[in-house]
Length: 162
Image (cartoon, rainbow, N blue to C red; front, top):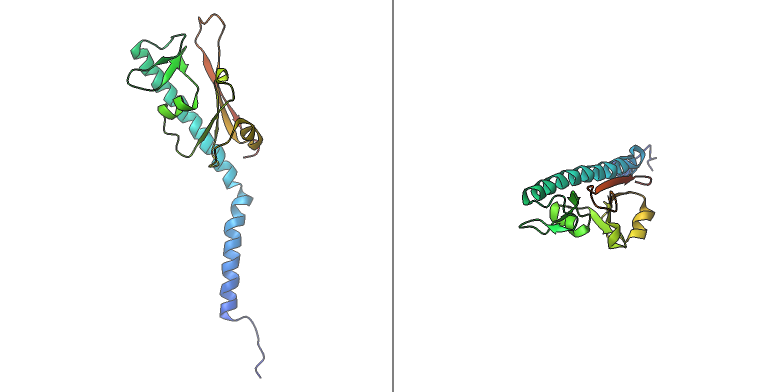
C-alpha cells in the first residue's frame, strides 16, 4: 500500500473555495463598507432633496405662490408649497424627486410635517425607524405664529447604528 504524503488537488481546490467565500463575506464587515455606503447614500438623498426644494421653490416663485401662508399647488403639478418651502410629506417628496430605493415614512401626525428616510429596503412605521437609528429626519419648522416669516425645514442625520 502506498502511504499518502499530502493533500490531493481536489482537497486543495475545496479549501481555496471555502476561504474565498469566507473572505468575501467577512472583509466588508471588517472594513465597515456597508455602514459607510448607507451613510453616503443618505447624504446623497439629503443633497438631492435640497436641490429638489430649490427647483420647486423656483417654480413657485414663477407661479407667484412662493410665500403663500396656505398650502398651494404648483401649476401643472401635484407638488404643494407653503411659506417659502415645499410641504414636507411623503407624497410631495415622491412627486418632486425620484426616490428610487429609499423608504419614506411620514410621522404619525400630519401637523408634524416630518418625514423619515431610510435605505434598507423595507417600509417601516415611525417607531421602527427610530429603533433602527440609521435614517434622515426631514422636518418642517414653523418660523412664527404670525406667519410673516417663511417656514424652514431641518434635516437631522441619525447614523448611530448604520
